[in-house]
Image 1 (cartoon, rainbow, N blue to C red):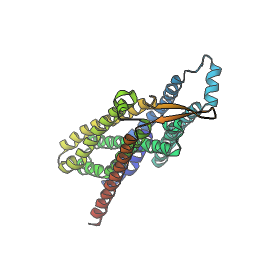
Image 2 (image 1 turned 90 degrees about the vertical axis):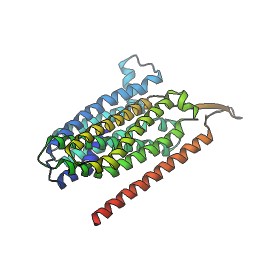
Image 3 (image 1 turned 60 degrees about the vertical axis):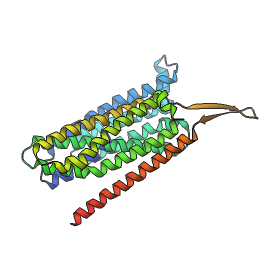
Length: 335
């Protein structure tokens, strides 16, 4: 989440706002640089934990070091693990030696995108062998969540730095930060929700599976946490920003923004758990006349169709909201 969304949020939201108001951006850059270094270390540890979590359900005989080496060398899971380790080390090297913020921010964003690509390469969607569309939806889902969540962290860091410095106007700068983040938040939420619903139509066979399977219950928990975060985001955009008139309002916004970030962190924790949980697929074996067997995935067509329509509706609504947001920006600049 941080490796992608935090650099994008800093480049697209925080830096332009600070420059416009003549604010000192160095404390924010220093904090973000340290945060990205920690995120790189987490990527290294998380890559290993994710690899082990994916290998354990396979129940392989791995009683020797040679067996593990063969697994890493020959399996896709092992190869993607090595790639993630290389990406994490690359980010650490660049963060240590690159002087220009644009260099280490852009590198971290690219490293994060590449790491997400390796995750989708070994995801449930890729394992199903249903073509490139579910895999692309998986990648878009991860990117959208990272854009939203990482951008929120960038916004939170900026607001906390604003509160520590009395040298410039806290209120107008904070209002500008919220205004600049809005299109990123709208795009991230709409794309994450739309692709998430679409992926549910692939991995959840029917409505009963949502409440009877661990996979389905995790989806419901993720949805509840995301709904809470979206409710706070709407409060910030439509109420908090307009009523922000005192420094106490800025401090209050900082606290509710932290709550929104924590909810999104919960969503990502649920997503990580979901990635290591088997989907509730109902498979039926058919014996063919030539003696071969074919495996078929049994689903509820009406349930699948309803989810697909809902996904398209969410994506369309998000596109409209994003367009209206940019139209309002262009009109305000023209005035």
